[in-house]
Image 1: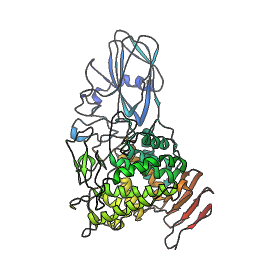
Image 2: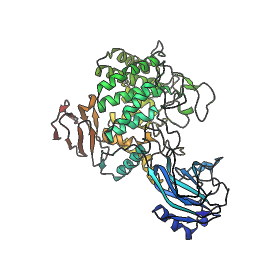
Image 3: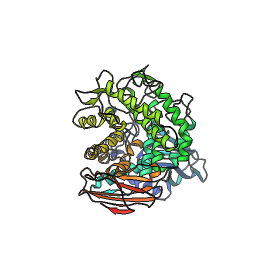
Length: 571
């Protein structure tokens, strides 16, 4: 804590040990522990509080006396280096840093409380978030007693029931980081991030729901999100990229991820009556996309922001082959057009999922199966580069990405497995935090979870840099807490331990552990019928205890066909 000049902005003043008032620091610490503190009249103090965790909370401030005193409370996820190019650095370090990024025209995000001179309690109408809190206390002609300062934490009450442990203790630490991220981004709705937009985006929400299914067994927010997107679907079949929102925000690829969300829900939770309610929206979404499939079977991007991933060099996060129609605005990129294998293969994947949904709900799957087949045939003709054994991002074969190879395999393209295996030895545009999920899905398909564990280096690095949650994209990052980066929790269950539902509602589950170099791993995967316990070792031994309502299909190398197991079994 430091003395501060009345009226002086704090955004340009670095935190410095030389300014620290050691003789007063103890009283401020005791305030956080519940002991009242008196601030003399005519005093201005700047106090930096490290909550030592990423917190979403309503501040509660109890005051007595001190008429016209001001208590300003601002929040930050992290402090910033004074050099704009240096970013945030280690999040545990505050010395020499700014409370607010360089170039801010105002001091930051937060609230101002003005004492009325009586015994009173102040709070806010909405919560704030971050790790660091800056108090700027300015008294007038009377002493101010701060009777108490508390932070009433808020988030959706998820419970981590996965209890994943393994021979590598770093994975448990990443799991805690990921789960805290999920919590901080889950409130009345899912949220992309708690500090900035606080919006329920479709692409982000799909991953949040998968994590919730695998780690908590709770589907309440998933049901809310599926319905919210369905009810805000526009007449052209597109689902808003975010809802609720007062601003139109079309991201066409996110419409397809909403269909994938419906498919995920059907597999992990069941309730096909609920799924059937969503099927008109699923059909409208697919109709919107197949209208722009040309005579060759090539999909042309729909009008809107065709965001895929924050890849360096991709304009506004759109893959090569997609051209922006106008100037790219930093807050909301404009519409775009073009042809990209990434979007083309995404449509093929989701068309196959739509066919599954029709089958499960008693509809006709044929038209979506035919659409997927047609798109995959066109992908081989238009995008596959036989010399490189890779799918190009664009029609001219000038760009290649991990995104295209991963989606080719997941969609069932003829050369998909070849492309992913080739990709591992090539330098392509890499997936980042968000799209790493789809890369990990592809690695699961080819049994290369060792590569998945290597790619977790980014998450291990977050721990080394003092982060308490997962960032939006590789440094320099804007958001320090972004829900889509919590997906390793899902992959602990679904990929490393290989627990995958293969029939609606997890009535049938295939278990195919792929430890990727771990000596052992175990978890308790929540299901609609109770926990499914799995423990696997590098020697090939797997122990499973499953609820009796679930048929477990074990997968073992060298076994001619999958066989159902009993309720409790080893192999």
